[in-house]
Length: 172
Length: 365
Image (tube, rainbow over all chains, first blue to last red; front, side, top):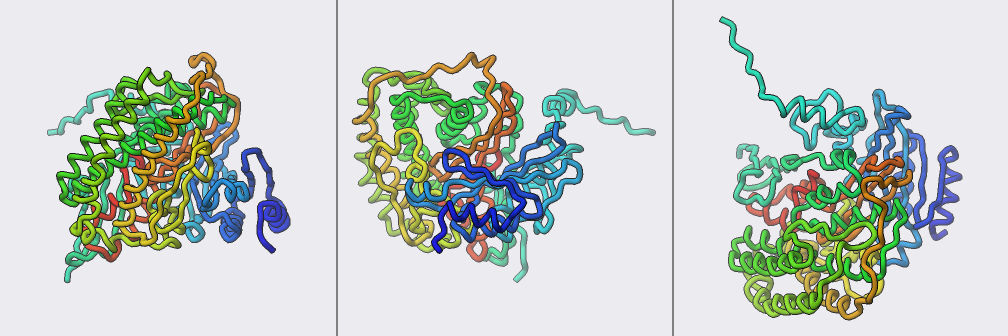
């Protein structure tokens, strides 16, 4: 059976029963999945046309006490016509804000590695199974990961950079 | 032989831009390469959450120093998609002309970096001079040389001044006249061929596996180009080719860039010929009170290095809730570079890196 978007959606609904699937205009399919299923669904999508992971992003919904991870997938197309056949997929999952952890997807998409490192550094989301979960960009240590909504950039800048550092006098 | 750890950049003669690679070498051979970005991290995506929709333009265009225009475009497109704003026909065509000019300018800048690094100083000077001619055009149009903030949600800031399209044609002709000279001294030069042929080779499967886009992918024979795949601005109204090569090495990447530049110039001529008349700007609400309804959008454009995307979220307020840029150099510089450098020589590090046109500010953001 040749895979197209229509029977891919059907297959997805059958295989992953408790995921939520929405089709939108502009050729976008949004999938809301549980975090345990993300890796399996990604592997399934990769095997079925969606072989290009464009972006992994994270949004801090502080009022709902959760992070939302978004995996944006498409396919390496040649032209507009073949794009219409697949479109984009936004795979979303929600994880709790305290002690956030999710399985790494590097074994499915190798270019996920820096994205996961970045989200770990800026949001404090742990990716289990990531081979080098070390800081990517930042040099300083922060109490709160700096891209979380409860990190006040302006206050931090004022506190850290607007005063002349006091060098404690040596005790005799 | 002893294994040595070598810090290649950010203070290194072979490094262009604020980027560093830690190399584990044995003699001249690289055993392991670790990309180390962050020297230019300004936290722009976080800062954008503190500014209103329109205030973000000066930040957005500074994400990529080499080519701010595609950054403006992708942000304007995302805001338009969220707020449901239409763009007049003429503005779409003007945007395309403007973006293609930016592409040529950016490729010339890349050519400067590459030829400079390989020691072809003459070509470097030429490329810089010719880029300057394009910057002169931008200065006349927008008032700024490097950062223009010309594209706005709803269209472009102002119409082309009278006789401006003639000036574009004239400038491009004067640059085009030098293409045979560029070919003789650089692209067809046996020295250049020897220096780049077979260096940093990637197969198509590898490029796709590692998230390659732009000329990294097109040099392996895959013609993945957002202008064709998901046309924006006026790209679906004119006909143009996507140059590709099969070899996947540094030489073919540079040749793809050269062919792309020439194709872009032809594309600009076609766009100028078909440029419709009309308005260039649809009014948007008062920027100080402008609130955009809840929603999310991911838009993408083809920058001079490949797929450039922006994931923008609004919570119904007057500021973005979250912005995340998907920049082409991110995968190229952090994933592909590390893999390709393994097994190559120290003298080829800069060569491979610039052939993939890795731009550090774009990675750091």
